[in-house]
Each structure stands twice: as C-alpha cells, then as structure tokens.
Image (cartoon, rainbow, N blue to C red; front, top):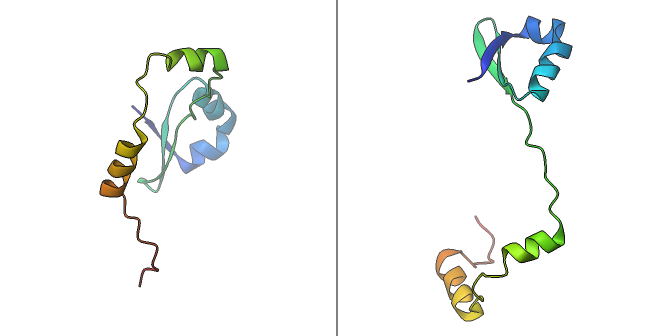
Length: 84
C-alpha cells in the first residue's frame, strides 16, 4: 500500500524517500490534500543467459505459420488507408 506524503515532505526528505523507494516502498504525493502523483520503484531487469532462454523454449511446440497468419488477419486490422 502506498504511503501518502506531501509535496513539502518530498522536497525536504527526498534522500530518505529515495532510499525507501530502493527498498520497494511506494508513495502518493499530495498537494493541499489532493493526490497529484505517485512514486513507485521501477522493476529491476534481470539478465538471462541465452542458454537458459533457449532451454526454456526447447519443449515448446512448433509454430504453424499459416495458422498464425490467419489468426493475425482475423484479430488485427490490416487496413493501411489513412484515418479521417
């Protein structure tokens, strides 16, 4: 659950708020009692070795490209004319 902080708290305690963001905490920033923004930590990217990625898909079924194309044509608009 995000903790509410005021604009003044954000300005005055930004260093501590950044450390709390590093620990995974989230904040709702308010100004005059009205929520104006949200601060939340970004998800850290995790590097996966190519060998691990290839192994993860080793047992996956082969793609039927004709069926895949038919599915795309059925669900995705392919009209290239400009929109009015």
